[in-house]
Length: 361
Image (cartoon, rainbow, N blue to C red; front, side, top):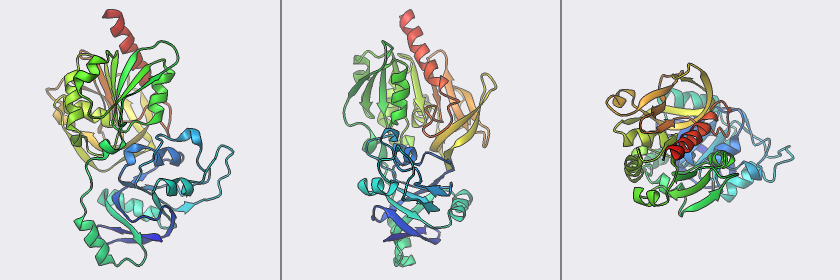
């Protein structure tokens, strides 16, 4: 049974296993959300990551068919304090452990998640080995040292083919570049009447132009934005031709396409309660976040982008905009699954931009 964690610095944590029985080496991160473990498990942005849930009880409301963020969850592993395998929710169709076994996702419970979380905050995200209790420490450390984290996560979670979806009404046509897009982003656009053409992450700009979109959307996704130079080049060629909106990884890709730089945060932002100030109106939004990388503020000087939002916890860049080029982006998740609904207005802004563009075309 997989019931031990070995960290790069030699720390060992023992617990009990649930989900799949597969040894894994992953990046160790934490999420502070109090609800939404199903959306977290099925968020493609957690590919190759072991997620420590700081809320102590996980699994108690099971898994509901309508709440998945992707059809095939690719989260690396779940690490929880207490796991409940008897959900009491009328919407539940399976237990969390059953779903994790089906998709090959291991889990460990019963360990001190407070201590583990503090370790991540103090020393940062790093590699972790999920293994059997009798695996010798030296053997585990050798495996960790020899392992290189993959850099192809986006290509593994992106749509492999072009798909078309029609919303309610006759709204604008959006081409969405899928870098690991969550279903609630799709729902948010369809609900506003958009017609969606979802394209793979490496779709060239000329192909997107041939689809005659009213706007281009760049989705969230896993990993380092520098690992998708093809997407960066595509966005660089499209900015100025159509209204462009990016979320999370899409935000970082827009920044890189405009000549800015990104960097890796010590332990990232993951949770549903991050306060962000909108610099354009002074309002504070409580936001849902999930990312390891951020845009380097000083690198924005001389680019076409201006900062529109800032994180109040660490002053990192949370939003960018160029009014002239009709492009904007946010580092957080306005579709908020899980999370608060403070930022849903950003989808309305995108739709207005596209409608205004059609009027003046």
